[in-house]
Image (cartoon, rainbow, N blue to C red):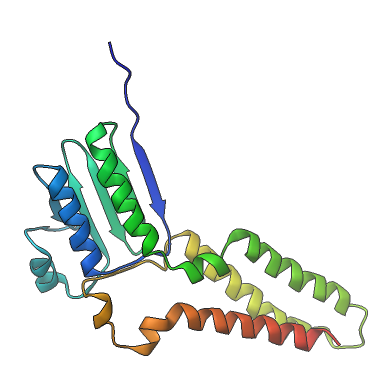
Length: 205
């Protein structure tokens, strides 16, 4: 008799993963398992080049898996899920792949859309609105300024929790030439900071 080993699962949000990361993951799995499958919802592929030829450089879903022992990584714009069975042979590649995903997490989004910070944003706005009730300003101006910010924060927070900010790019990081694409997260942070500052400037005398 032996103790049955438990499997493990890791879910990630806001991950931006590149071709070199996917190739590293495939090599890690090939070093640990006899058979590694690369597939999407329709086809199984022999290489990343074949996948690019079929789907292009930005894809919506990809699964890299081994059947025995079982280790699978499901990549999609709505979900990043890493799952292993209880076999000890899956433990090392699981940890290594988890580190790659952690490295590629969009940290700026993870910080500004942290549940605690989002709750503080809303609390601050409500506090300012409550204070504003004692000021001789028009209620319509208050709503006009604060409502879009609260709705926008709510949408961004929900999208982050649902994994909508994950991206799978079949090109290497240095090939991402667009300034907007390369610096999008920092720009988001500046925009949100500017919006919050604008609201406070308008509402606080």
